[in-house]
Length: 132
Image (cartoon, rainbow, N blue to C red; front, side, top):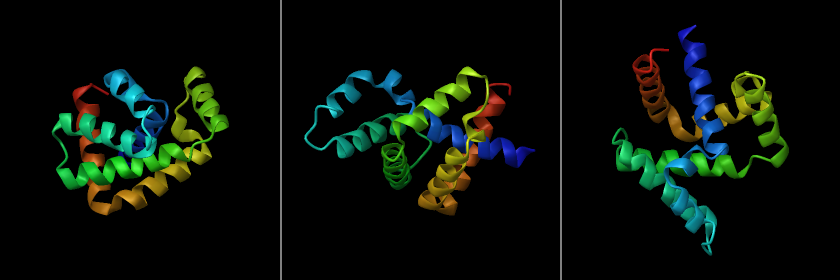
């Protein structure tokens, strides 16, 4: 059960990134990134700035996390975003969707075992802190 929760949380990392959870924390920075002549690079930089604020990852981990996350976010279609929103509206976990599960596997491969392990540990700790 613990493993399933952890995988769901990693899937949610992807889901939240896709749905723009960073937008709430860095709305102005994101607006500026979308005005950039290199939007992808600007989005990676916003991610790095916001992730660094958490103080949980070192610089190399932040670089890897943000590069993988933004790359994954860029591959999500509009229809897939609708599927995620529909699942949320139905009070279902987006991690139940096949394409989110595949993206989760792809993200873990991109992150590598060390960063994936660290993210799982951080997610579990956050869940405990939130009383889940």
